Picture 1: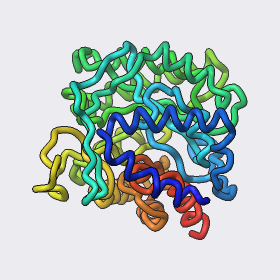
Picture 2: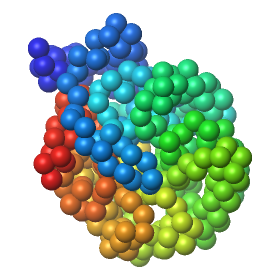
Picture 3: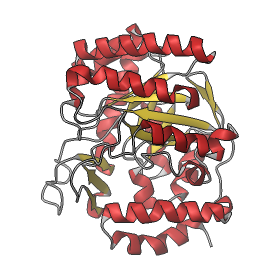
Picture 4: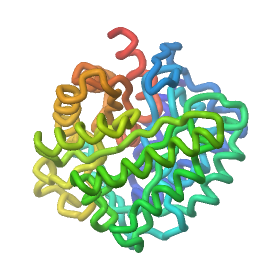
Amino acid sequence: MSEKILYSLARPLLFAMDAEAAHHLTLPALKRAAALGLTRLVSKPQADPRTVMGITFPNPVGLAAGLDKDGAFIDALADLGFGSIEVGTVTPRAQAGNPKPRMFRLPAAHAIINRMGFNNGGVDAFVANVQASSFYQRRAGVLGLNIGKNADTPIERAAEDYLHCLEKVYPYASYVTVNISSPNTKNLRQLQGASELDALLAQLKDAQARLAERHKRYVPLALKIAPDMDGEQVKSIADSLIRHQIDGVIATNTTLSRSAVDGMRHGAEAGGLSGAPVFELSNTVIRLLKAELGDALPIIGVGGIMRGADAKVKMDAGAQLVQLYSGLIYAGPALVRDCAAALRAK
């Protein structure tokens, strides 16, 4: 029985549960299935290597950060055929995140609203999980580690949190993503402003150079940005990325817009909206970035990919790789193979 049929049977049961409860049921179940060797039966995409940021990705379809915040399920997720696994966002110290309930499905819109608030066990526990994974130990594939700041760290001291996390995760990452675009940590998106971003990127690049010398290995830095920006804001960010020689940009995170879900149950909940409604918003940012960046640095496209054809639109807009998250909730793990097939035919 194909994974599409299996997921179509499981989805009504999962959707009958609270969204966060379903999340906490599914990942441990996936881990148990991996331990029994069952996930190895999942049909994998054909090899389709792409070299981006100096890294060879086995295929261009990656897992976006947020699904596995603590890096506790890396091996099980890797069995689903992703060309890369990105875990986090992790913060220096453990934090509970925002009060529950904080994750809501909007099935009519193929969307999710979350206000998780970087709930995680802290960077030391995160690194221990990464080190314990056989994916890391065997250097089995591309591993992105996504870093953020603690909610109670003042925004003017945010760089200290990012630098602390960068130093901790650097030895274990294929690349490191700097998340300044979650809408669920107060004032975080302020770091996308021109002067704040310049100051942060300058410090991160200095640290990257020191760490590359110490570990005798260069680990690329990618910046994850929001979809809720106009052309001038995107141009400003693109200029900073080029000026500071950042290695890549991930476009985009969730949106604060509610126009696509106005009037729906849960549509007015606070938090970031992901899934189908963010598709065109992220595509617009990708196109604007591509116009400004040219080939100076690669774009990783994420946001609203619900089928293979959507992944192709992201690539046509200017992305060199794509990432999935909310689409997996609605379409199941077969989405990885569907997207990889659509991009291989490109």
